[in-house]
Image (cartoon, rainbow, N blue to C red; front, side, top):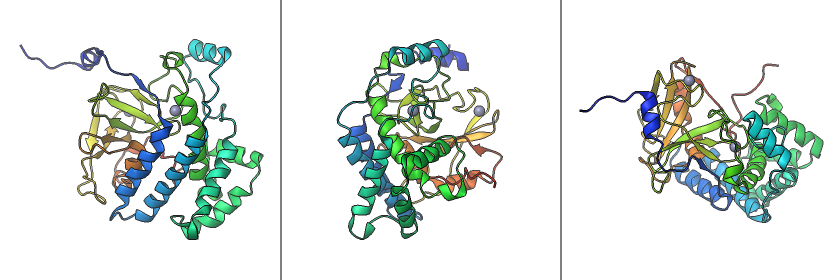
Length: 318
Ligand SMILES: [Zn+2]
Ligand SMILES: [Zn+2]
């Protein structure tokens, strides 16, 4: 006899053989993100911004390839602390990757190297020059404000570039981590590797991960599984619903990106559905669906977490 499964039962049905954690592959991550951003830019109202984000992702890919040596593994003390306290292995604000400032300067040099600054919006060029001249201490302070969601108004233009440099370092380190070292009992609402909030979630297709929903870390690009019935912000199993835009922005179906809303914590986070578009990429598709954010701003749901390449909503009141 057929009956309706309760949330707890659905979860136990889910315990078949599929990866709980998908560690990033920096060699392809930034390349695929750049390609997706360029595809999304076609005929898009914010095409110039998406092309710049693609240009940045291409520069990230070149820097990721240059970090040929894998990151140093976690030492015993770090592994023990994470295990005992159920905390992320590399909490972002305490564990900035070594040499991230060099990566940042290399990204800035890459952006400035194209003929006529191709792809870099004119308004941003002075800011990039200012960042290139900043010392390590000033960059470190800016990184702390960006990671802590405490940006000042004057930080806004440079913050996405700083986050881009940190993404390269954190993804490199996540890729070098052995899965068995990742603590299993970190709350599923934050990344088990770096403790950042997910930028979006993604319904994957193909392979063992196919048909499963993963939360995608906006910083290190690790992905971890969470059953769809749960809110990705508060883990409530009640009142999770989906809302979408009526019309597409640019070339991609409006069904590819939906806002998953929760009536318990009154937030939303986007779900990117590869079943609707196999090339969908969580961070890129989140960035390109700003219209959905504008529509959601009219509702009672607040955005759960920001996109690290778009530093707008986090301005602190003066
Ligand atoms: Zn992470
Ligand atoms: Zn919730």
